[in-house]
Amino acid sequence: MRNIKISDVTMKQTGKGIDFSLSFREKIELAKLLDRLEVSVIELHPIENLKIDSLLIKSIAGAVKNAVIAVPVALEEGGAEKVWNALKEAKKPRLQVCAPTSPVQMEYLSHKKPEAMLEAIKNAVSACKTLCSDVEFVAGDSTRSDENFLEAAVKAAVEAGASTVTFCDTAGVMLPDEFSAFLENIKSAVPELADVSVGVSCSDALSMADSCAVSAVRCGASEVKATAVATDNVRLAKIAKILAAKGSAFDACGAVRMAEINRVIAQIERLCHSGKSKNSPFDDSVRAEGEWVLTEHDDISAVLKAAESLGYELSEEDGMKVYEAFKQIAVLKKKVGSKELDAIVASSALQVPPTYKLESYVINASNVLTSSAHLRILKGEHALEGICIGDGPIDAAFLAIEQIIGLHYELDDFQIQSVTEGREAMGQTVVKLLSNGKLYSGRGTSTDIVGASILAYLNALNKIVYEEENA
Image (tube, rainbow, N blue to C red):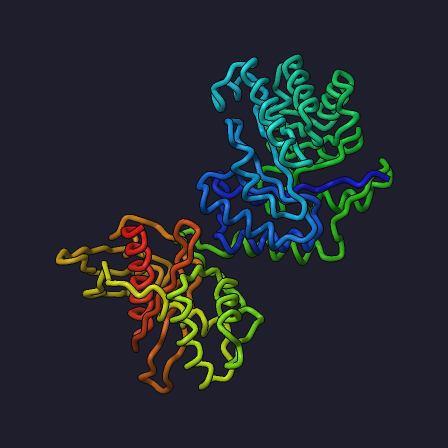
């Protein structure tokens, strides 16, 4: 019986107008959930920001234990090396060469003529094959391509070393029987396809994606691209259930863990649709604290390793400061968890002269009106003001800061902790911002938790500004 691979493309949908987006940490969590579900391939989006995206690929490669990690390669020279440097530590790496093969997409997306596109495909696949044994050629918009050109492109890719060739009904223009006939024709015209895996990607423009995928599997396709959430693609849960229930009828089976599929898909849905409000770019999901605990008997290497697991890159000087502060806390508390270590790093590492200082803030919040924030911040001798609404007072305050500085940073984590007890208790907040792939944490303390949050954000922001200006 043929084992049909499910290649999840959920991660590729972010940033394409889909109604969800994922933070750095959420993408890693999504990859872990998909790996637990035992999908065959997890596809990541192309490298756009070299530093941030390379760090993401490396982080996911370290977190995923079983699935193939696939990353697209740019057709330009050097594209394969750029991706491979980030992907090579994965247990099962795959390089993807994605190229449009229809006349309209070649002209308007790649600005290449057919002859130039053939040469680019051949060169890119050859470059990938020298680095990685698993290379996939994805023929974009295959169903609207000129037959002769598509055949030539597929032959060139297979001859150059592609081990998987995927055909895309990008526009979703085909019915199931038309798509299976299309695959049969291309297989007859290109005998070389008998030696490689054939994959399919189907758009759901006509609500036929799942049916087209099944039709493709029936005529020999061995890999199907699908998404775990509702997008314009084959649905992972549906194709997995169809293969489990009826696959034996056409000598096929899926590898997805059916006993866990409903629970894991529900977790992924919550991650993709509940992590962010439509009115705010900030992540509002709740995360569990890490399982590790440090004690006063742990040495500096253990403390620095724990800090690294939280995402911090500490210099030798900051590492010593964090360890000294840790020892003072550990003697009193006996056990130090991730939240306490976050606060220690925020208060001890990379303390810098403040570029931005809070002068005043006015917050309006109620259960019947949208929260708003009016902040006045000093940069040197200049007073800067911002007014924003948000999903709650803290969200509005953070948005007002972003309005003032004209930049958006990914909010990796936000914590609120009580420092003292009673009605006049002091509250402490820790804010972690992600900039160019590096975490910066800030701490704020006040009897007003909104004020503490603003101070923590500015503390982290000042560290980013200082390091970028002194780089």
